[in-house]
Image (cartoon, rainbow, N blue to C red; front, side, top):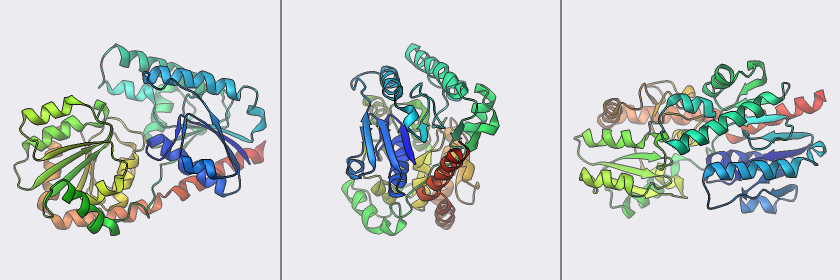
Length: 379
């Protein structure tokens, strides 16, 4: 098959970019001719002969809204005369106006707007424009397939945007269970702890997500952490660094010796291996890769039911589900439960590792390839 995939990023250290990186690599290895319309691409993909890269420019140092608009315009122009050449065109959201066969919804802005966390003019403008464009793109072609990364996203597409549910296929993200393997815990995790002067018997809580947005709920995790009166408790905050905001909160609460703001960490494996529990009290998530990675690392996960990834978790068996991510007391209680019961902690972690084996990248990509094949067969 000759396949065009349109996405902002095709890189490993980006959520949507990672999904498409894995898909492109898989499709190319299966002998398909894969054309990527993207702004950033992993260097190793350039070395695969049956991958063709079409660079879509953006204005680098500009707000995300402007980047999205510029990408949309140039991607549309680049595909306007070429779209008939492809057996499959696979978009990733409202990224261009070209006809498509498949579109993966990684984020439903109408669903996010309903949460009502972010405020301010820019947020309202950015969200409103994205909702308008998404409605046009998702509803434009009645016979195409939309991949929703969770039942949560499927419900938002049907209930809020009005997409026929027959067009939607739920397909969760994947994980590399060889990369995020707990066999590395003793050596890799110990090295990171040592670099941060964290003792072997300290209890380490990990948060991994963009600290620049309120959406991931880090502020409520810090609030919960302040309330915990237990010895040897440490908190690692990793992801896009927010600057002075969290640092001021931590300093004002005199938590500098126990809370570490690590910023962006490329080697995320070491983070999971150094931690005892992964806490992710997000307000909105389609299907978080970090939850899957933590589970593969046999870390007990505490996350909210607002995370699409939580749909695969059996509460108290292979993870703990928060009813309200704003409730710092609920977060505190679940952390203390795992702190005080190391046998429960180990059991949940092991069960999580077994559960996630059903959600590998290969299995996800095989399902996408089958969707392509059925579309081509019906043409």
